Length: 274
Image (cartoon, rainbow, N blue to C red; front, top):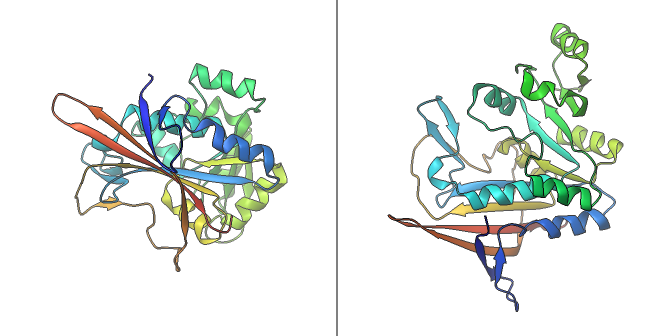
């Protein structure tokens, strides 16, 4: 794949970029300069703000196929490959087991593996946020259990003991939900530099609310999905006041098919004050 993406903002001498490496250098430069953890997240949405709509097959809110493209997945993988640590949750592990989420718990692209080795990036660890511990333990996570730490507020001793017997690291946290402050404390203690969220919008909203998220990548498919049953980036459960974003990059990708021209805007935001 060697699709070309047009740069819209900021203006400069170079206006065309390959999708193969568009997102590789900006985050890496931050990793090399910053002492504090660098947190970033990525969302794909329709023009009317839907990141998920109701899927009849699985009876769940899932990313509609209509807004997906090979380019946005390639850029996701580039962001994924730059992280020291991935943060995910119960819902993702359930979906992985049932087949409605793909396996994104490790870097699979051979070129990105070589890129990581060339840049001396260590193996990725994985943090699972799970208040309930209600997720299946299967081959998808068994092969990675030496990299996995589970942060939980569950007081179910049996579940915790079962996981620990299988050599999973489980850390109990106070409260009803694992707080982003506790997550941040743990990440600092492990000296992770670059942390990528592959969980849903709830944890990202909390990170924004607590002024912890550094960068937000938004891929907006130029289509209107509609649907009364949908999810969005910010639900409003935790963010009670407005937050400013600073646009630092804007790109356009166009792909013609026999029926339509599919367009996607790729937006990169710094969160002000970070």
